[in-house]
Length: 339
Image 1: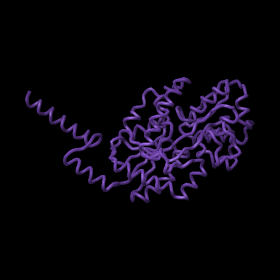
Image 2: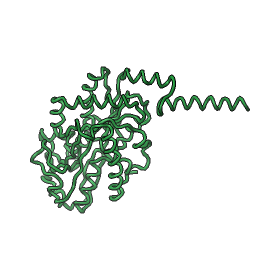
Image 3: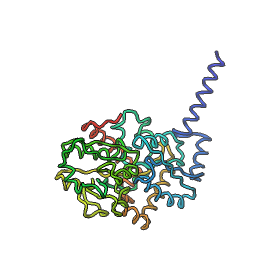
Image 4: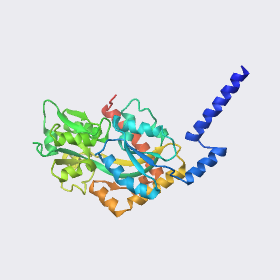
């Protein structure tokens, strides 16, 4: 029996050692090793898990930022798309990754909307992540295919169709889904939500005329609008986008206070050492001062956040935590639940 007790203590000590290494303050020799590794960070390639598939705004942003991070940090940056469940699949992978700065999450506002929409995320947003930086805000845009008979948002709001008018979004629980639910309230008539596994796949079907309208990020739709494959009906931001100065806001058309922007930013697993978070934030901020990158982001409809409060780890954290509470209350009010 005594031997059994000793074994239990040894096992418990070993377990505590694992927990200390990955998820709590380190002591003794382990602490010295961690400090040494932090000083040499990064030690190997960095994987940025993107919560949506290729072609969407989140993916485009990651792929534009990746080479700048790679150059500054001296290690390859691998973009790993993990779409599904409105970003929850990718977020879950990062929540359980080792907290050493080599696995990061590129997420958007869906991260803050999901807690109020999904009953079981598989992780705790406020406990399992360390925000690094908000990179930029981008509005969503309501679009239709170039061959569509729909010419304006006013037409959408007034049209009383049977069956219900369908709209494509970037997925259940995304800001675009939420925008559709808000549009439903303005319209006073049913809209049929068709969720996709990202903005890219949704756009394909809107361009092809398979779905009458789509609500997607401006960053994912900008080139298709410019090329004439899509017609922009309205943007969801409070002000018109410089990218689409002739396209009205939903608020203008509806004479309401309709407003919904979307942030995109980087997060790490919780308990990632503070010096690593600081290093990553500094590198992101420096990248965002590059005029070439700024021009690329502005062309896609992003408002880069370099130097702003939400671009700092503490400010980004405060914004996300506030959004989780705000969107949770809104989702509850409109009855938005997807599982």
